Image 1 (cartoon, rainbow, N blue to C red):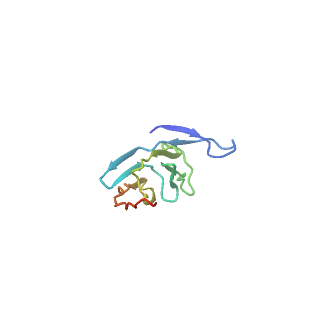
Image 2: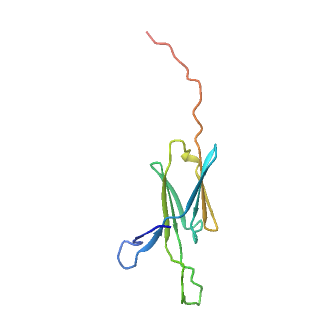
Image 3: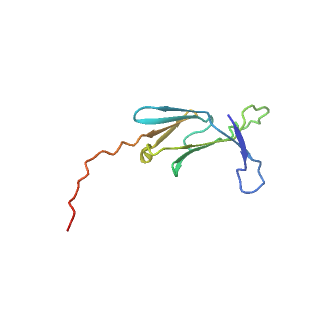
Amino acid sequence: MTQERISETKGATQPARPVFTPRTEIYETKDEVVLVAEMPGVDESSVEVTLEDDVLTIVGRTRDLALEGHRRVYAEFERGDFKRSFALTDAADADKIEAAVKNGILRVRVPKAKPASRRIPVAGAKA
């Protein structure tokens, strides 16, 4: 994963949290594209999927999992957040996008828009 550091607050009182680029796989069928992103420590209350100007953005925030009554003495897990954006084509049906997260794996289903197919009536010219 790649990472960048950004400030999580507007003030400089807290250190910046790392922002990780989640590992992602994308699958395609004739009807949809499925994006699968690995975001350990993220659940449905801490993930956000948005679509703006044909850009799908996923953001996940992790929380410190400190046990009550315990003090951490050693840690290899770096706390941080996840963020990644994907450009969608006109073939995506933006109104039917669905997302679900389970065990730190986010699945976003992007249905493909059905091609328009209909007969167009032709009117005669008016004199």
